[in-house]
Length: 181
Ligand code: IMP
Ligand code: MG
Image 1 (cartoon, rainbow, N blue to C red):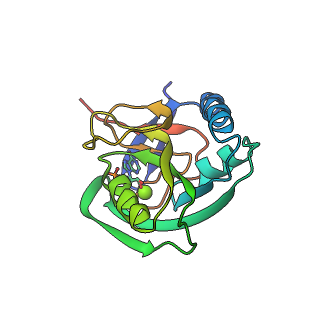
Image 2: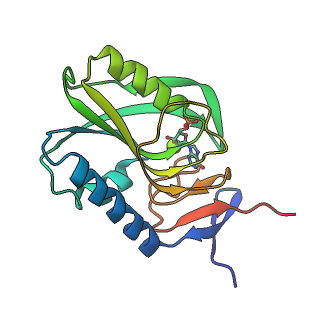
């Protein structure tokens, strides 16, 4: 029997098991530990989705670092909207800092572009992104994705911080929207 969950009106099937996610996050952490060994970066957590990934990743980081948070919104239900809103903007002075954005997912890249504009204006020294999941088929930017635990198909997913209308973030595995055909 297929492992599935129902959230509101939709059914999702298990896609990436928890242990596989842990292992992939460890690989990302190993790389970040190498690349930022002699630096003192700010990890910029995008609330709410990246909370779970950020906690998992932070526990595996051995470098000297600080965290800061922003809260943006571009999603409604299961589709992206055109407008990215700043619900909580930058609260720390990031001028001259190395900043590593932490994301749960990069979809079209609209949110990433918004963050790049915001952080460029704030005068950061260096900017990279680490994301738990990335949808290459949906991505519309030329900007590089520096660290990525999973490249996934262009289907809606929940779990491990990812939500459907606010629900499902607490699922330890990642689930994919079930399409009946
Ligand atoms: P983008 O701006 O199109 O890259 O979308 C980024 C934001 O949309 C993410 O931070 C998520 O909050 C949300 N998002 C995109 N795809 C999914 C998905 O498959 N499941 C849950 N949220 C998603
Ligand atoms: Mg979201």
